[in-house]
Amino acid sequence: MKKKIYSILSFLFIICMPVIAFAEGEAVVDTGDTAFSVLCTALVFLMTPGLALFYGGMVRKKNVLNTMMNSFVTIGLISIQWVLIGYTIAFGADTFNGLFGGFDFLGFRGVGAAPSAYAETIPHGAFAMYQMMFAIITPALITGAIAERMRFPAFVAFILLWATFVYDPLAHWVWGAGGWLGEMGALDFAGGNVVHISSGIAGLIAALVLGKRKGHGTTPMLPHNIPFVLIGASLLWFGWFGFNGGSALSAGGLAINALITTNTAAAAALLSWVIVEWIHRGKPTLLGAATGAVVGLVAITPGAGFVGVLSAIVIGLLVSPICYLGISYVKAKLGYDDSLDAFGCHGIGGIWGALATGLFADKSINSFVQHNGLFIGGDGATQLLIQAASVVATIAFSGVLTFIILKLISLFTKLRVAESDEEEGLDTAQHGEDAYPDFTGAQV
Image (cartoon, one colour):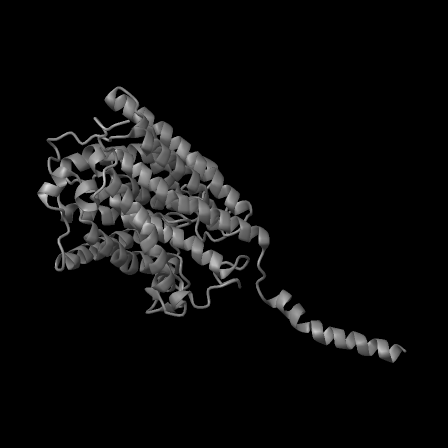
């Protein structure tokens, strides 16, 4: 009888060995982390329609549909591009010494329900979809600099080429396994370099290549719908909790730290922008308050999971006067036409945020930090110098590639609409639509 029992137990042990080995040696999907990731993916997705409202409210009414279309169509373009080739360039196995990923995930091959090396408690597919939302909104941010004057066919070509040759490799540099900036120790929790500096610099170059809008500097070009701007900014703030909090890739303490620092920095920046504008112009504006909140969100993005709440207050308080100065004085002095201040908010704000991470990064908050920030103590300026080097590399890469892409497209099609189309408005000239049709005289 005992011999029979031992035989049964031995058989059961042999059968269960693969299960035991998997539990001990392989990553296992956590349903809580997965649900958190799915929620954050949806939040970040909402940011791009929010951006459409934010930008759409700031242009003249004859260009509102074109401006919103630019953001919305980017969702479709990059969703397909990311599945086919974008994801594998960004997160495929490293090739060419940290410059870009290989083709192992081409067409989302192998991207499914099992975990990956990037996130061991959520399905690989969940991680890839979450990262897709970053790939979507980044080129959409550029549209704020080229609003009211770029031809739609040229815009479509630009978005696809820029995403493939600028965003995807840069994402690999910073976040991909073996990426050279990540290996160097650059800290970018949720996209200071990858999202904001890259798009801000691209916007500046695109604005310079396209030239100023007709009547710029002589014709009033006031926002046509401030309530749109506020709704858009609110959706961006809402979605940013997924943008920064979700970058922890698990529902734990790090995500909570990112949520706290994100909201705190945005609130501080909102207030400081209102104060600066009030002092400078004599009256606080809702447009300024919305802009302040956004630049605060931009500035905290690279350090949300690396800095503490008091540091977040400092980062938020300082980003608004820095960006305000850039928009009010530097832009005016140099005379470029960054239509909706994509560079002024995302470029300048992103640069400050990346450098501020080098000032306030704290090992006690995130063990990924190798060197405490300059103001935290213990490691001197090491992290600040690394951050500065990563900023310079991002500026150079995005700026040069953006210029080359635009010049390449211009060999095949015009970049800018005709002067008559610009006068008429891009809604009608490019899309045959009117956001505010005149129904005067129509029968009721």
